[in-house]
Length: 111
Length: 118
Image (tube, rainbow over the protein chains, first blue to last red):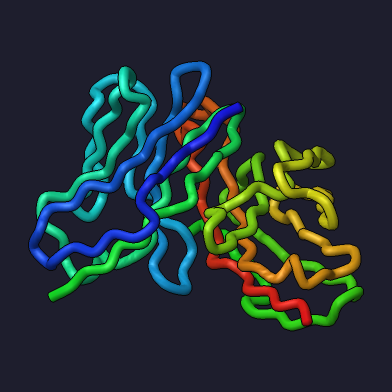
C-alpha cells in the first residue's frame, strides 16, 4: 500500500530565510508525487508535481522539489520565504488515480 | 472557467440526522473524490468514483455513501450523522489517467464544507 510521511508537524522560519519541508513516500512502482498548499480556510492548491524525467521540478510561487529515489524522498524547498507562504503543506503520492496524503506540515513565518 | 464547487460551506446538524453534502464540477472530469480533513490525519479518502454509476470505498467509508448519476455531481451522504464525523470535507476531481496527455492524476479541489455534528 502507498503511504506518505511528513515528519515535521510544524516549522517556523524567519521571513527571507530558506525553507525545506520533508516528505518520504512508500510506493511499489514509479510514483507520481505532488505537493499541495492549503491557506487557512481554503481548499488545496497544487504547487508542483513529479511524474518522470528531471528529478528537480519547479512549481508555482518560487517552490521547487527534488525527487530522490534512493531515499524515497520528495522534499520541498524555497530559497527565500515570504510572509504569504504561511500555510499548511501536504505531500501526496498517486497510485491508481487515487491520492494518499501525508499528515501535513504547518509553516509559520516570523518577521 | 471550469471549477469545482461544494455546498453548503458550513453545516451544523444533530446526531442521527441524515446529511448530504453536494459537489459539482464543470471540468467534465471522469474521476471524483471525497476526503475528510482532521487534525493530525491530513486528508483521508472516503469514497471515489471513476465515472457515472461507478462508486468505490476509500480508507474511511463507514457511515458514508455516494452515488454518481451524472458526470458533474458526486453527493456525499451521511446516513446517520455521528459526532466523530465532525470534520472538514473536500471534494476533488481529475480526468482519467492519460486522457489527452494531461492531468496525470492531478486532482482539483473544491473549497471544502465544514460540518459540525452536535
